[in-house]
Length: 395
Image (cartoon, rainbow, N blue to C red):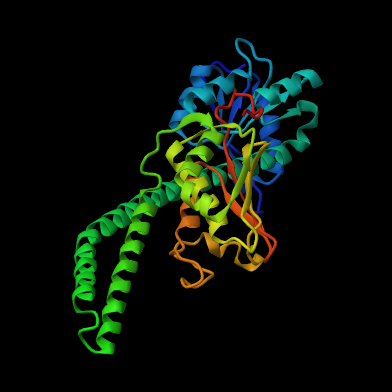
């Protein structure tokens, strides 16, 4: 047994073939066994630089002083165990493969060592497989490093995207807000012009005035819609409540439209959810209002249901309206995207874009299942009220 805390073992065998450089720390109290292991690594194609650590403090100093590719540790040592190297690695925050090289290691002990974090184990009477074990450990380490790098890059991109989205939301809010006053002035004076001079000028003048009034009014509506869209997500305080309460709020806001259209809305046993209630009210209001607007020959019949899934709840707002062609299923959620003329159906194509933004900011997704003249089912997912809360529906 060597008395030195750290003993340098230098490779003496010459080999004309190119070899892979490998820095090894041996946790071993028998220099002869250490040299046997290193010889197998050289035979396996490695150009080995190695040191011996004979105590936890010695191993800690070696890790701090020089890079290390792999640690080869005997399971049983005089004053400490090779498994103690795991604690040193964790304390130093180092991801270095640890391979046990032991004279005897039972299956139960080997499995327990692997569970605790050992990369692999090789028996001293089977050292021929040591180079294979080392290469596999190095490949696994490289894969982990690449994964961590990818995760860091992804986190950076997510952070940058979030910042960019905040900037865009702020820009949309400021731009639409600042446009309100000049648009009000344009709309007011064009309307005044229409009232005062309608019929007093020639036919073309009346037409031009009408175009100006319609354009200013439409621009006001667009700016208001953009302002509404930009405000979604600015208030993020969430609470737990029954989804049926948001539906009732939405129906109260849509009372006139429901009465005039003769719409019937069915909903029962909707679950508890964790969300920002005004946004959920707006979500149901937009979907119900959409079903009323795009109705067929019959009075609108709307059914709202929810079913549990692994991630929370899947809500469905199903109607008997004119339906949507499958090829337009994604386009309808794009802001200002319209499938019909304003003469057929009023609006600017913002309602469903707001629905999508609300659902996504709650961690869910929204989609539609529909065919022309067969109604539509708008579906979206939401998380439960709490992770430990029962997901049984409540009235």
